[in-house]
Length: 620
Image (cartoon, rainbow, N blue to C red; front, side, top):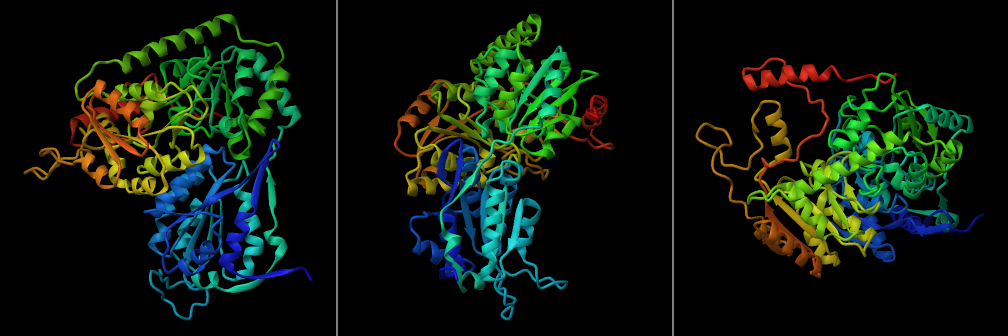
């Protein structure tokens, strides 16, 4: 009989996690960087005790379980999905706090392991504290909420079940195609139960990340389609980053002369000043990318899932005979838009496609037009960086100031509100990893914990976290974590007195910004009184941050320089004018409007909406 180790189920889980490694291209590294969480009665005697016995798998205390998962997701993204964190919680509200984070991880295809406590498996003491009772079944708990937002879900009702569950969890976590949140619900009594586990379960295991190649015949057909195209366009998505394919992309682009538009996850695939870089594409895209997209007869998607922001709600590609090629590790994404699917790793697929297309090159006139659009867009960015607006200054000027101070390898991070769109258009990316925006789920509150995850993955890079006042008020508490862990962030807190993004959308649909201002309730019952006297500087200072208040562009530039030199997390507070917006460029987003309304502005917007919607297409 194989040698066995008598351990609690929780001890066995932690020992297993410590010995998981990944390898790609001959580089091997430990997969788990540690465990984030908060202890409660549902995990302190199980996972908590196990972590105490295993200090070489570091435990990190967080101040909201949702933030723990955001940290883990950002860490995985910055690590190109080759490293991950586990997150533990107690049962009940501690567990359900992680559901939003699980959705962030799964939607963005990022590996995160969730270990929520669960109700008693033996049931005799039920209902326990924080248990959801269901009259139709005793085999249900709030952890069932994780099922739709997890790529793999299991409830461990017997200690020996982890012998088969843990390898399955790792299979999903390390899969380039199937990764996302993995949830193992752990009943609190089973966590503490002992079992004689086979010692082989805890031996070092290396999960090798393959670079799968596409079908050879499909590759030849793709090359034929490219050679027949006159106005092809590449849409670079996050898969370019995760497969570390930026050099392969640049070589393919320079050989073929095909210009590139970038999704949020793919921004930085080419440096902003590469002559064939058209920048952001779609709803938050540049004029350059969206004009070329409109007339493209062939669209080559690389590692993109074609969200509505990328396709401008299926209005971006208007050529009557447009065709698609999709390079993607996930078959599910490769078949979208009736594309010719090249199911495989982005880097090796581009390398092989470059050989297949040989000396073919786009027409000189087409390349010259793309290069001219690149130059014109850069001039527009410079204009918006130097508006000399206000004070309060414009948000575009804030982005320009950050871009000027941030080094080539430093990271700018954001997630929600109007900032992602402005960053996508305006930020001049010079490195594949210096733009980090969570826009798969656009999660308010992601920014500060996300910054922690990025800094842990890339400790030598300065991280500039841009957070709007709405997002900041949701989840500011991990500033305390920055201090405790010695993590230095540069947090730029934009005070625009409410929800600027949704306020702008509200105006666009004729509702005038209803419910989006941070104001007192007026005599008429609406939020149209005086602005609320929120002191963001005092709040950040109370959490322990170094704080600088800027009032105009020169003082903001000085504050950012000071923040970058500071040894600890610094919050720079700057007021902006929410009406000084960065325009949209040749794009549209489908937000359905009320078909019946008393407000004339809404009725007019609805008429315009119905007209614009006619441009939406099916790609069959």
